[in-house]
Image (cartoon, rainbow, N blue to C red; front, top):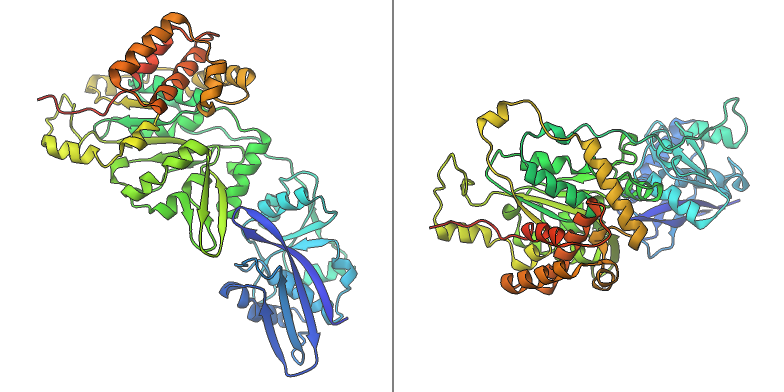
Length: 505
């Protein structure tokens, strides 16, 4: 027949939308036309497909008028993922393979000029979309990304290394049919970084434990070399394990961006963009919109080192995602809604020279310079950070002593127990509680409430700050195994709601 239809999928933001590749052969002047809102990479597939078919000893219908339509026509298509379905569509339309063999198949893959199949990004997103669609289809992918798609249970995933192997398997001419890829999700690998590696710093370690237990945001302030980055890098080792659904979602996001590795399975993402990152790099952007660092940190940690050095626009763009857990990007031709349920950890020096409050080295910054430096962080942004922690400079005696403190495994066990208490009580971590849920689940003792009201009036907290102190206090109580929030829990929560350090002169 002169018309064939092949099934594939295009990455649309974080989803994999279904695409039908329609190939039509007609008499007339020889041509190869590709339509359907395809970008330059897709249009270049004409030359790759032509060379791959000829190199594989297959017939390319060079004397025909070839029209390839990528449907739906209003969905942008990008990348080289449509090379394989276009090649199979040409073979089916020219009668070299049976169209019926392709009716229950979805495929994607880049073709080399020799006919070799090369992996494409987004295989896991394709598999999740196919399972969600509940279609009885096989998924055929190149070796290198089929293993990734096979992590989604309940699908038939097959891999191929060369176009000719796939054609022979479809025609039942090969003694070695396509290999079905089956694999169980690999066990989560242990984090290499341990909290015990950090000497001293008992206060910041406690804050890190509270942040992990409640899913709370954290700002570390201190002179250079005090261990702020080391503390932030060890937060993932304290967080509870990902559920299967969370692990699949996190892996699918990284897969759609071409960054997933099997060794990362069930490990929380730790994203640490450089302070030169633009607002689009952090929150996402482009046309069509692509996910940014806050989305790639889904269910994980976003670490912003040297926080005041980030562009003001980039930092202010974080305010809404910190509240809502989602980011909506609108462009004139396309809109996208991305998840952004990440845990923010930031680090900064207290002043431009970094030595404000350092007992071993004098600060050389003026009060105006300190105010200007700290003023790069707006009040509304600081208002959204749950815990502000000073990380002091350590003496050489502490640094030269043996490692002290608890290992990550011990702290993580307490964190997991506190998180279970919160989930059993209210269905989510304390950091996700709304104001109404706080009223319902807080359980605050009268003396604790009186202390809270006195502190709120004296420190002139906003409503947002007030509720964030309540979330921290509820987390401290959960770590202590207390059903009620007591005065001691409120007192500790108030201590973590501190202003940035200033010059005392």
